[in-house]
Length: 118
Ligand SMILES: [Zn+2]
Image 1 (tube, rainbow, N blue to C red):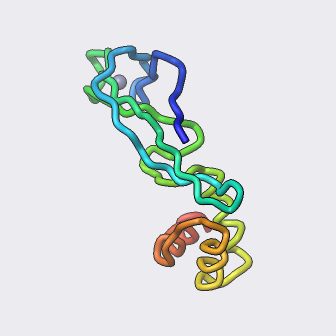
Image 2: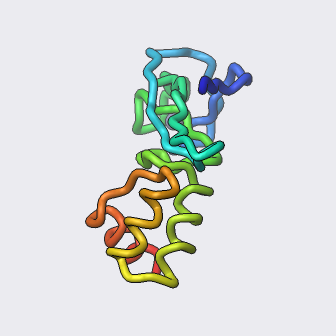
């Protein structure tokens, strides 16, 4: 699946100035909720931008998306699905159930995720 945001300007998360100067582009692989029992990985085209505010402490910044955290490899809705599943189960049964449902997560990342969100 292919996703790209349509707007040209991107707002700097550090100083809130919008910028249209693209530094470079790269692709992030983001796991999303499965479709038809198949694992879904979004190839998210992400732009790295120059901040055009000379007073900002950051020269460049990466484009951010509302459906995924800036460093995350899973969409927010997938993370909440994983958390809902693991609340009712032990980490071992949760990770095998998720695997059966085509969601790839290791036991250790599952534990980290649950720890971070409880
Ligand atoms: Zn800035």
